[in-house]
Length: 200
Image (cartoon, rainbow, N blue to C red; front, top):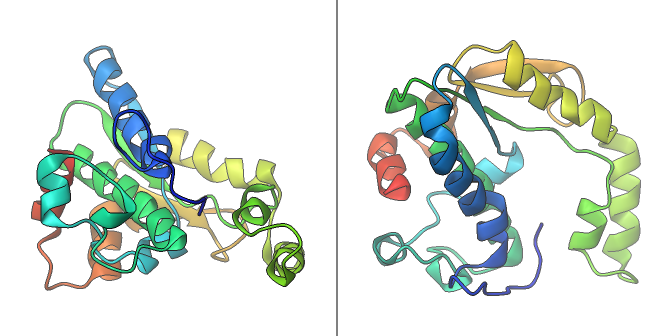
């Protein structure tokens, strides 16, 4: 989460490769043997609103994802948001393609793990602030995992699951992945086309 850019030997931003591309590759490899199964994509709540259609057309055409590939400012938080938006886009496109495999997405909420503190440098005032925010608004990693379990076993195909109180709480299905994308990105954008381009 929000780490300084590191380029993998495949030429991608490491965060994009870890958060999205590796899961997509694994899903593609396994999909022939997954008929009747389900894929759960790990997205985010704030992330999908912070990264409005971030990838430049030429980045999608070249299939390379680096900080310079972003339309907006190339901050580490924009990259993080873009990876979470991309996961939701792939969830919606997976469902739209009707491949005989169900697809859901999940926002696990604000989990009190070392993920967020590692995103800000130790010794900075924001490091201490992150701990206070986690205590006030966070939930345990186990409670965050309940979102993924709900998305895996009890939520409808195509749904988006997140905590009832946005950052924490019981799992709640808040809508369809495509609907959530349109609400987050605005109705002027053809999300089906954007999702297809990312998939390709």
